[in-house]
Image 1 (tube, rainbow, N blue to C red):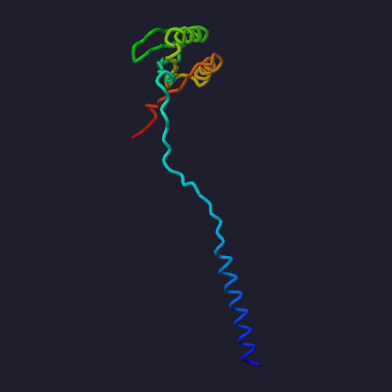
Image 2 (spheres, rainbow, N blue to C red; image 1 turned 90 degrees about the vertical axis):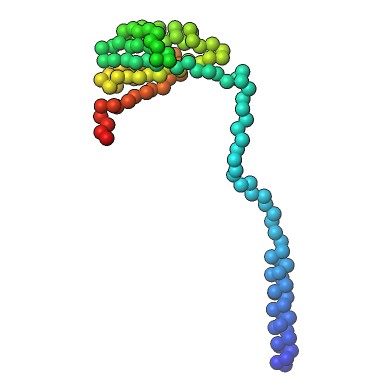
Length: 141
């Protein structure tokens, strides 16, 4: 009986072994896309807009100086006149192929509220804007 029992155990072990081998051959094939370089397609030249940067320097005494490419193009005093000047420059420099971006450049002594007021004008009139603020006097080297 011992030899019959051993043969039966070997038979059961081989059945289990071949069962595991049969199961392990089942593979789920998946293709994993690895992130790689993305190639940006260039838009046609006619869809690209060139931007004219109109810099607005403003000072504590309510003086606003407008310039393009470091050349002064006008100045004014008061927020209502600033709004009118910005709209005029948008109409003057902007067209279908050219956009106008206003670079707001407050002086260090200007109050935060004055900066916010000019920013609000740009927001209400849907004018492209950016703030360029430099703390030259407070940085120690």
